[in-house]
Structures are given as structure tokens and as C-alpha cells.
Length: 225
Image (cartoon, rainbow, N blue to C red):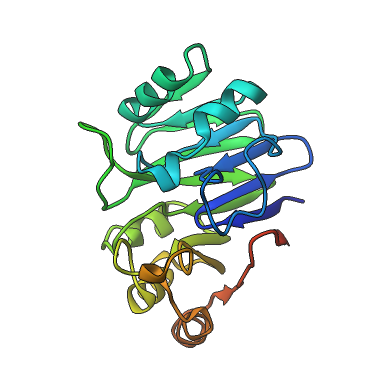
């Protein structure tokens, strides 16, 4: 059975008992982080875009652990400049890769990248016989319906903080369009500008979708049943 470890902001790790996949490891300087960059262990690192609160410690962790960093080529170039010799695997929107634990598909995200020439992205992660959609930083966009049609989504990990990403109402509609069975809200409350009422998000999302919303505090672990 796979487990979801929430480390705060947009950083999480999914493990299947053998492989560990880390996403957007903004830990150093993150006031909500529940683990340090020197403590986390992983085999793969998914980076959604180049903003500091997402790219974060990816190069440093990859150098220490030998993990493979997966992302848009322009973002990986930044990683390689910071830590020459780390292992990387470049992808682009719509592409997929089969890995020892399952499969990863890169999806569109509507957001600035933070790296010249780069794009922001999300991922559908197949691990432990579960499909987990990590939206990255994004606005609501209509092709979320296609993401939910292409893969039956067991979990959707969605930003709800507003200002930089979707807010509560748009993230609730995203959950509906994705038709996910479960939703994990992220990217809120780290700073005052993205302060949100997550309990209200749970209420409105569960009223308008079939999803169960799981509110996780940094340091929490959720078994992906």
C-alpha cells in the first residue's frame, strides 16, 4: 500500500514500501516544513516549476541521495548548474515515463515557471496501484476534465491558496472536473497572502463532488487506500 507524507506547503513524498517519490521539495526556508532537506530520503524528485518555493532543495537532495530529478528541461538546467553531476530526466507536457514503481505522466499547468523559456507542469503519478494527480501551481483550466478522463484518479493534490493559484471555489470545481475519489489540499497558510479556510474548502468540495477531502497538517501521513 502506498503512503502520502505531507511535508508542508506543496512538498510531499509518496512511497510504496520500496520506492520514494518526492515532489517540490521546498524545505529550507519553509516556515511550515516538517522535515529538513538533510533528513529526507527519496529515489525520484518531481519538480513542477522553477519558483523557489517549489524547486527548493531539489538539487541539494539529489546530490546527497542520488535521486533522479524529473522536470521540464529548462528547470533541470538550473538544477544541474547548482549541483553539477546530479542525475536528471527531462520531460515535457503530455509525455510519460515508466519507472520501477509505475508510471509518471507530465500534465499542463497554467502558471508562470520562474525559469526563462520554461513551462509549469503537473504530474499524474501511478504508484502502489493508485493514480495520484499533482496539479502543481495552477489556475483552474478546462482540460482538467481530460486529465480525469484519461486516468481514473484516486487522489488529486490541489493548491487552494488563491492569489498565486486557484482559490477555494475554483479548486472545488477542479475536483469536480477531475472526478477524483479523494482530494488533498496544499499550497495554503504558509504565508498570510495564501491564508485560507481549509475546512470551508472541504465543505464546499464534498457538497459538489464525490470526493473525500483529506486535511493534512505538515508531518502527517495518509495511507492511500
